[in-house]
Image (cartoon, rainbow, N blue to C red; front, side, top):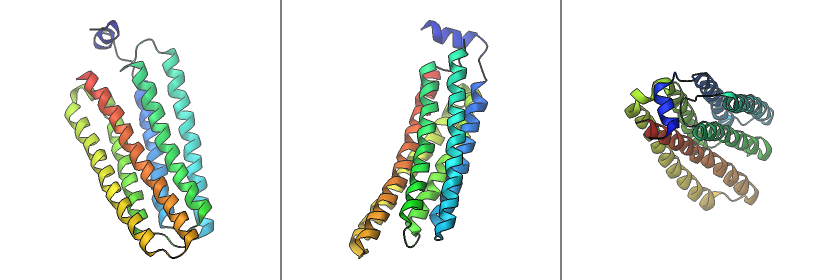
Length: 216
């Protein structure tokens, strides 16, 4: 067993990271909720307003990530491996960035009409964000709740599979029935951006699962 792992077992844990991860996840939930609203919206001005609010969440998220890195630089003992803390902070930041990217595409492209299937994908992104928040809230007792951590990660993985199916169905219908080439390109790019968010959500859960495995 490495010296670092021995220290993690016998030395009082450094818990200042946990509230920061929770804050990061709460901010992501806010952004994901706004993305759902945006995916339902057809008014151009409201789309721009919602996209701007998501950008504000992205800015707030960057500050939280910077704070986690600053704390990591100054911490003597960490609750789990330093590399894992940094990777998780970056993964959460990437998840938020992809939400912002999807929102930006909707606001810039201004598709003529919202799509039920794209709304559905956005709702699954929000579910993933809420599950990630639930995961961060368990970090302090992660060693004792490995099974529940694993179950929550599995739910995010299942959501990603569902989103893949929705995305494939949507794209198939889009290419078969959308007569306007410009609208087709707009909707295709928006759908791809939303599907990318789901993929990143699964990647974040994989990072958390890896941390849990190391602690088990």
